[in-house]
Amino acid sequence: MNKQAFTFLTLFTLVLLLGVYYVTLPADSVEFQMDDLIASAEKSVFEQYEDVKQQLTEELKSKNEQVISSSSTSSEEKLEALENNAALDAAVQFEAFVQQMLKEKGIETSFVEKNDDIVRIVLPKTENEQFTALQLMRWVDEISDEHVLVEVSFE
Image 1 (tube, rainbow, N blue to C red):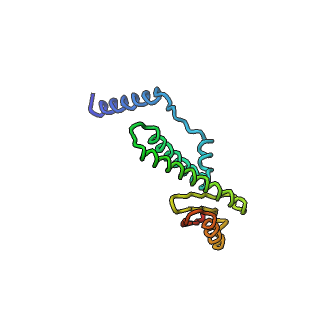
Image 2 (cartoon, one colour):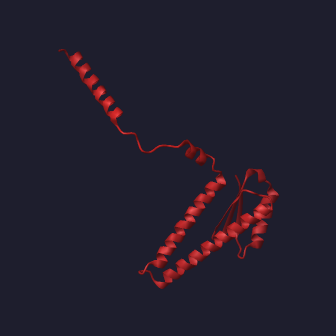
Image 3 (spheres, rainbow, N blue to C red):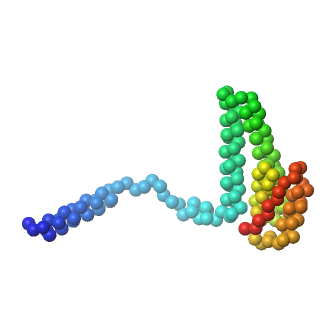
């Protein structure tokens, strides 16, 4: 048998074995449902922002609750965690109030986030008017108990 025939038989056997191997492999258990892909693509920017904000809030609350429930933490740390949870709850209530007031003013979709002394408001591009931004900044400053910096953007 010459070298060419031997090389051909070796490569042919290798391809045949790989073909049989791939055919007999079990199908992957991970299957993509087209509905899932379409549903995730249809989420608006505002819903994505809300999902991220909600996830971060839940993580912070769970961390604070772990500190509160731990027997190895000091009372000062527990008190600080309780204050942090109260501040998170107050921020969530303030955000919900601002969103409700925006809906009453005719702006159906919006995103409101309060971090420390900054209130971030994201509105649709259809609401892109300078006086709207200025009015929102004044209005949020008036309803806030503390002095906050208001950031308005349009997406």
